[in-house]
Structure formats: structure tokens, C-alpha cells
Amino acid sequence: MNHDFLSIITARHCKRAFLDRPVPREVLEEVLRAAAHAPSTRNGQPWSVAVLTGGARESLARKLCDLFDRDVPMKMDYASRPAELPPVHEERARAAAAGVHAAKGIAQSDAAGRRRHLRDNLRFYGAPVAMIFHLPANAAPGTFLEMGFFVQNVLLGLVAKGLAGCPQASVTGYSDALRKFLGLGADRLIVCSLAAGYADETAPVNAFVPERASLAEYTRWLDQAPPDPE
Image 1 (tube, rainbow, N blue to C red):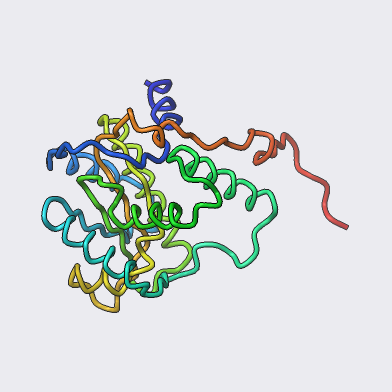
Image 2: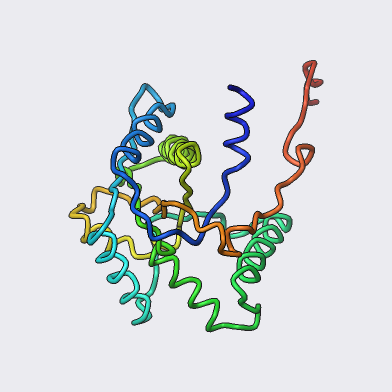
């Protein structure tokens, strides 16, 4: 059992091409119920999610693509990363982007191709399910941590049920449009979206898996107390 679960964790990576195959609602409900066992401070369970399928998903995708095509500026509700990143993080980001582009046959000099790829985000990569995750507008860093636990559980639950997903920050660049579409007020903060469905494993982009840092790069082992600082 433990080995099987670790295999689910390591099998998960972002999929960006999906089959035109509906996902049964009962499967999504099962995943979301399980995901709600994520930890949260004082069992607050601050997360909320809107699940869009069928005409609702298609209508939202059209709305987002229209905004993009008209060059409406994107602005997320929160800073998703620091203004400056360590060089190693920047290099990983560049390598991951280059890998996705290469898998889709997009040259680094192909500005139009890169724009099409960004627009594809707003179509949820053609996935039959789009999830929009949101929090109270006064969310603190700890609230985002709790939402992260929940979203990760959703992603792993999808893999466990033979599905795939891709969490997306870019879609939330149109957070005002998302709130309006979903009937949410200014008291809600859009965190991310997630494209979900059955992966098209014949698509080259789904074979790309970014390299992971070695255990030694992010782990420090201690078996005794370190010396007191002077």
C-alpha cells in the first residue's frame, strides 16, 4: 500500500493534452471528498472550488480567450513568486519552459508559437474539466499553505483514479473576469485553476517531465542538536 501511494506521487506531473472524454461527476466528487482530508489550522478548511464542465467550461474558456486576444492586461490577485529568485530557481524555470515548448514543436525564437501556448492555458488545454480554487480575500500565507495541501490532494486523487491534471496560475491573471463569471464577490481571492481529464498519452507534450532536484539539494539531516550560535 505504501509503495503504491509513493508511486502515485512520483507518477504525477503536469499534463497539457487531454482526450475528448467526459469525466463522470461521481469520480470528481470522490476525489474532492478525499482531498478535503487535507490539514488546516483548527480544522478551518478554508478552501473552495468551482468545478466547470460542458457548456460552462466552454463558455469560460471563450471569455478568457477573448480577453487574451484583445490584449487585456493580466493581473493576479497576489504575488505568486518573489521579485527576485535564486539563480538555480530561474534556471529550473527556463529549462521547464524550454522543455514544454520543445515538446510542442515551438522554437524559443517563435514568439507567435509561445503566445499560442499561453492562449492554450486559457482553454484549459482542451480538458473537459476546469476547476477554479478560491479563498477569502483576507487570506494569509498560512491560508495559502492549507489551500496547497488541498490542491495537491486533488492532483494525487486524480492520478489515483486514472486521470491527470495541470494546475494553472496564468488563468488567474483574469481574476476579475473569473469572479464575475462565477458570481463571486470582491471578498473572494482567486488562487489557481486546474485543468483535469483523461490524458492524451499520444501527445508528445505529455511525455515531458521536468528534472527534479536531487534529495541532497533540498534536504539537511541532523541527528544531534547543532551548536548554539555565538
